[in-house]
Amino acid sequence: MNIVRYLKPFVFALECIKLMVIAFIIIQGDAPGLFIKILLAAPEALFPLMALFVWLDTERYKEYPPLFLAGKIIGIFLLLGWFIIFRQVTMIGSIFGLAVYAEGILLFGDLLSVGAVFLISRDIKSPEMEEN
Image 1 (cartoon, helix red, strand yellow):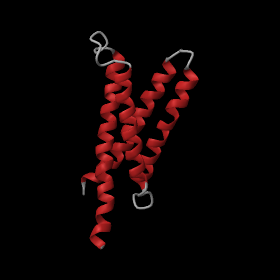
Image 2 (cartoon, helix red, strand yellow; image 1 turned 180 degrees about the horizontal axis):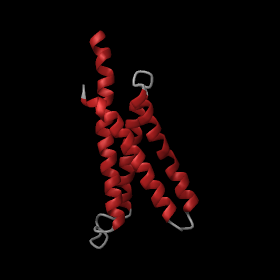
Image 3 (cartoon, rainbow, N blue to C red; image 1 turned 120 degrees about the vertical axis):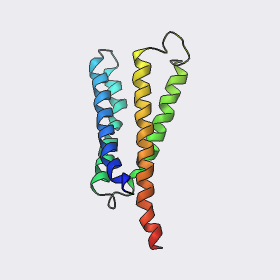
Image 4 (cartoon, rainbow, N blue to C red; image 1 turned 180 degrees about the vertical axis):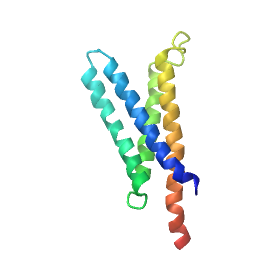
């Protein structure tokens, strides 16, 4: 697929932007739980690395897209759980809040990267199927 050639740098750029946004949000806060927020956000640094490795050498790192998909799907369910538990979407007053928009954008970015990595993963598997 020719589109997969363009999806690999797109996923890498999307993950880098997401990591910068998360880092900016963490740095802006002066809350007493800053260290815990840093610890919880640290695994997000693995996603741009996986996207970079898949972009550079798809054959060598063909095990990374399933890990990437698993991590993103878990992250999507956790973010949706966050919405439900803290009732951010169900409360009329906070549905137009900045935090809801930011989390919605992060969720949309995760959904985009899941779709792109699914196409990349399918493209990696297709040459093997043609050989058999």
